Length: 411
Ligand code: DI6
Ligand code: FE
Image 1 (tube, helix red, strand yellow):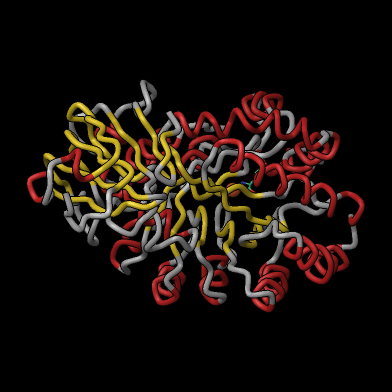
Image 2 (spheres, rainbow, N blue to C red):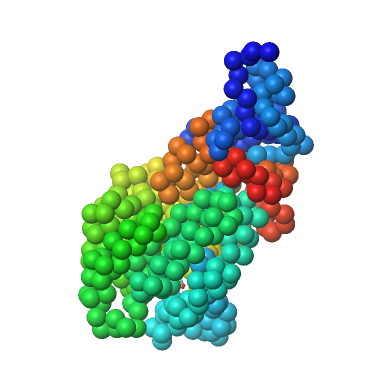
């Protein structure tokens, strides 16, 4: 029979869908149908509006038993490729040392640099893959992974290559960020300028030429790099047409978020100490506020990010794990959503937007990921819950019952 319908690969039925279409609300569709062709969603709407019977519409029809479908979650800020761990520093902090004191004594980030440099690429891959897998089990279908524990060309390259390999091994999209100015490596001690110069003139163009850099990041902080050093890096990145983002105003206000906005950054991250004037600059630049409540929690910070100002100025808020060995050993994005609600007073709707549409925006994937609408990638998480608020409400427990990435079922 001729129907004029180009058969879809999959049709998902017997589901409720939180599409997140539009700028507010969950965009809920009851008794929904989702059509998938290739790697894309081609239909997301009411089942009753399908023009033909399900088996005429698609090669494969799957009944989801009344489950809730959301976009697969997006973890848009992680440092999950590293060797070793820093449980000993966790203990030191519990005995009274501060994160800054540990860093100044040569521990902290530099401890992870030593372990990461000593690991072969295969060892690094083997150590890091389970962390990405844990995120996947929690509903994550796209991960941003930063380097920054190599701090020399070979070390940064191997971290970024491992990040790419993780994406291939798991069949998910991984975006690679060169975290170029994270800490000053020992071989450049007392030669800060030479380090920044080498990063900008040699390593950044080289790693980009190898196809390993989707964006450039830095740590703007008293214990890390100054606003002037950040500006040099961002100017170099911009000259290479690379998007930038920044660890900004986490422990003090160096006006990092405003610098990020000045360079049209995708996101300004942490931003606990960011001023309202800088929030206004972020709004004007379209820079996303990347909230990282687990780092706030682990460091027992008390200064809250300016959530009300972000809302008033209409800055999009994203939420991520910041999965890293020092300040955020968190391997669950749903827990980050709960922490964002409990500690930062986000609503569950803001938390879900923060790990879907707004996380996509923070990765430059607006219009391609983060919503369940026709034309977006078929990245879907299927949850046995009654309401979307439960995704932020439960702590621990079970992740989704199914995850689709690029139209393929991952579990
Ligand atoms: N990102 C970072 O660069 C630091 N905190 C953060 O959110 C430190 C990470 C580390 O201590 O290894
Ligand atoms: Fe970070």
